[in-house]
Length: 354
Image 1 (cartoon, helix red, strand yellow):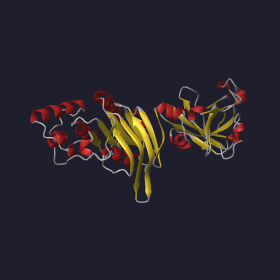
Image 2 (tube, rainbow, N blue to C red):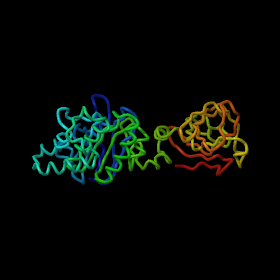
Image 3 (tube, rainbow, N blue to C red):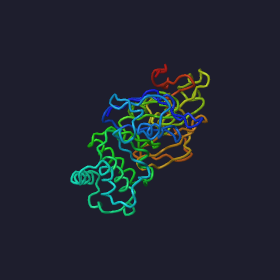
Image 4 (cartoon, one colour):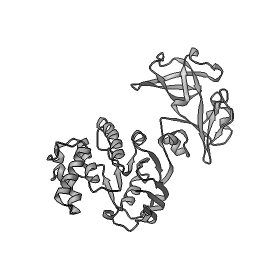
């Protein structure tokens, strides 16, 4: 299903929850709505589902206006974060519920339910009740029930929020594979960056009811279009005055300019690890955090505390040790514009506008 949303608005009393939202989603794509709590993600999802009325704007499915269409006629499946399974029904009965409502023949119901039981890895659990299942198994039942009527659009509201971290990681991969096999257009809400980056074809960053940016996870990370996106995505440090850093003396020329520096923009180590020593400056290791595959290093440079990564293959640093630090680039922004600035002692001294 191709989705087109134009000038979507929603108020709850005096609160403007969704503000002139516009986007398109291609058929078969898996889209993540990512942003802070209260940003408008779930409101957008519920308006697509027909569970909330919109104040103004248009929602079109395959070119057809569905603003006034009731939820049951929109061809959607909805998965809630709290599963919303029927406690008095078995796994089989939960999955079959929507098919029975549609008065599908019993033989067809049996075929479709068993197909989904196999697809979602629930074979052998058909006669169990929700309380006899793990959190991950209950969520799989919720997915199967949503998919049973063969919807054209699958909507998921923080589908892994109620599941522990280990199972959540496993279900991300499972969901990605499931959506690819089924080939259904899907939209899921999350505030978990890792979840969105790992699962989605594209991400829409939602903040204060607006779409800040839409694109692939890589494009959004590499080229954030707004200061909010830059600060929201990744493990970054924001500093007020980057002009104190070596090679970034011009960064403070525009009043109110701040700098966001991502961990991968920084190298830290000993003298013999750098070819271009003239672009480095002295720093002091303040903290070291073991991350399993690498170290997260907090280093203080000219009064700024910056975070970077260091490979386990390299010599281990020590807290309080003096090191050399090379900042390759910084993302600069103010209220009017944003741009990437390279270290002038290392590469082109002119900022690259984005």
